[in-house]
Amino acid sequence: MRKALLLQILHENRLLLTALLLATLLCGALWYTGFHQAARLAQQQSDWNNKRRLTAPRAEAQRADSYQRDREQIRELYATIPYRHEFPRVISEILDFMALHNATPGAMSYKIRKTDLDGLLAYSMTCSASGSYPGLKRLIGDLERLDGISTLDSVSFSSPDSGLEKVALDLQLTIYLREKQP
Image (cartoon, rainbow, N blue to C red):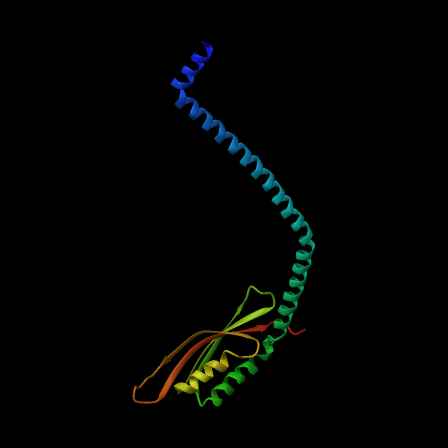
């Protein structure tokens, strides 16, 4: 009788028992996977920390070397910047470039301003020239390669008369000079 009663209960609740069995299997699989993943994650974290510990002294040494190398390059660059009293030589160099490219110099003016960098002055200079277009293009190329540090801030070409081959050039450049001599 008990056996028959048990079989009847199982037969009537077959769907419920199947769902309960599947839920139990799913929970067991999730628990096993989570446990396995946690152990694997802990192992990978341990490996990562070991590798970081091994490479940290090397990275610190590379950072120090990089700092020294960058500092030396800045020192070398700073040494190429002319002194303030050499500004007439820079102007002469610009005029020589103009003469080299058959450009007629026009008006030149400049303003001095302090920079954020200690010991450097910025000379904002505007000048004009006239000549052939190819000659003025070569002049601009030479001005971009002035000694020291300089920036060509603006360039404009104009042609007063479309029939003439002469072109007018207006440019603005900034020349950086050191304040004091050593």
